[in-house]
Structures are given as C-alpha cells and as structure tokens.
Image (cartoon, one colour):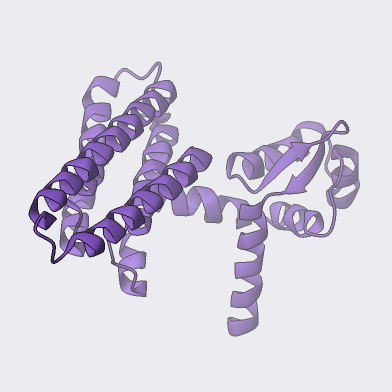
Length: 244
C-alpha cells in the first residue's frame, strides 16, 4: 500500500509540475484560455483515475479485514464515504483544515458503529488509509496544513496505539528493538537475550511485526529492524535526551 502510494505521489507531482510549466508558458498568449481549460480537464481526469484506484484498493483492504464481520454492511460504506470525501479534494485542488476536521468528525461517527471485539483490526486499517490519504493530499499540494497543532489533530487514535503504544508498552519489546538496531538476530539469539522461549517470545515478536517495526529476512529468517522501527527508536532517543 505505501509503495503504491509513493509511486502515485511521484507520478502526481510530475503531472502537477508539468501542468504548472504549461500554464506559465501559455499565460499572455491568445490561446491561453483554451489551453488552461484543457489543462484543467486533464487534471480532473487524472484525479478521477487516482481516486477510483485508491477507493478500489481501500474497499478491498477493508472487506478483507472485515470478511466475517456481521456489521460490515453498516460501517464499511461509512468508512468508504469519508475516505472518498478526502480523495475528492484532488479534483477541486484544495481542502482546508476545517474541511479535514469535518471529514474526521464523520469518520469518528462511523467508528462508533464498530462494537465487536474484532473491530479493532478493521478500524486500524481504516486509520492507516485515512492517514495515508492526508499525506497524499499534502504531497499533491492540495492540503497545506502542517503546523504542529494541525498534525496533532490529524493523529489517528488506533494507529498511535498500534504503531507506537504497543511496541513500547513492554520492556521485552523495547529490549528486542534496541538489540536489532545494531544487527539482525535469530529467534534463538532473541531467546537468550530476553530469557523467553517458544510462544512467550513469539507473542512479542508478532506484536512488533504487526506494528511494522521488525521483519524476518534471508535464508536464516533472522529478525531485522525496519525503517519504521529505526525511526521510532530514534524519536524515543531524542525525547529521552530532552526530557530524561
């Protein structure tokens, strides 16, 4: 999902740069009005294609997560509606902080429908999509909000817990992350480090894998720190130095 978004963002940025260059070239010429109209149509058509593709992928992601959920016919359309509202700003070319806040309120209302124990996974996927589309709008130059106050308001509650709270909520998991920052380690290596065996160790490793902090690589299936895991540890180190 993130790799696809990166590709889409790169393509969109190139198209926007080309459009701006063409607009600057045509301003002041007799045909500028017609050219600008054609460019506007091209921009909207491009946005339509991106929106359709993203919504199709979002629908597939959420339906997979909610495969056996009895309430999915109620909540999934609401999640899709709010995600579509975000993406549709690619066609208008701009969206304000107030509009983002209103869409988030609708999104949070949709979350209230989720009342089953297994809803957490689905809400986390929806949170990831919401955050990814905010980044998409920023990179596309559609949404300019970037103050720290606005970033705080854009935080997705479930994602904060899953990506930061869970990985750091246990001494064993912090120990694992720190150890992998220096070199990859096998399951046996981590067992010796933590003093845990079998399912007890696997429980913590799966928590870190699901949060995207570590993964297994190579023939030996050693555990390694991901870029996200490295960034999280780096941020923690900076905070500890500042407040410790």
